[in-house]
Length: 315
Image (cartoon, rainbow, N blue to C red; front, side, top):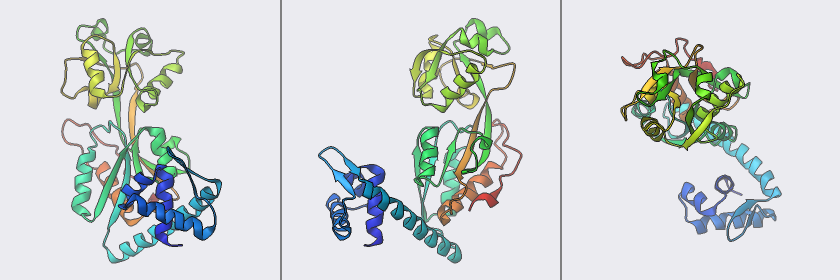
């Protein structure tokens, strides 16, 4: 049994595919199949059940996978601590993300991180809020930018709120509600809305807030792209509730009004596993990300959270 066998098992289990595992490990698919077969022969158990269409992990494989993941975490932790001692940070950082992140520019963050740590590869994965948290729990990601209030996560995660911005209502030019100073949730409930996909954090946030008032949105169109949402609004096909930073981007003409009377905001938090021992590359990325989260935003971009993130929570 070799360490490479454990990495191969973990990769096949993650992707449910020998070919995708081979791509991740930079191996030929035949080499992956051979490693798994030799491992199974050595232990006398079947780790994966193969068919022409799928690869499924067996109950014995689940036990092996648990041990493999723990061993790999310890080995990665060893490499990380040695890198910290030598002052040379290398490897890969796996980041989850969702948009929008307001004036907090992820591209600027990645550029700054690359300048400071050119030996670290950045692997960025876009996904929904629920899937990002699940990937963090499974140690598939080192950290994630997601729309959640840190206080709601419990003890499993550590998080810092890096940005919180206002939701606004986007209306077609000349719409009757455009004459209002603010638009209420009751008024929104009486209008056709252009909504995001069902598992979108944006959509669920609006639906929860309206449900608290005994209201439900009247979703007339479902979109996955914010540019498409804005285009539909401009054509008079409905209203949309979107973060101000998105609404103010260049595009077709629309009117914008705040929601009232109480504030309705979109949080962006940087989240990581609280008890996880972070590899050196991930720890370096978190340090840069949290540092930039406290930096002033360029003119026109608003202001960041005043409270400085607590770096000591990065294990």
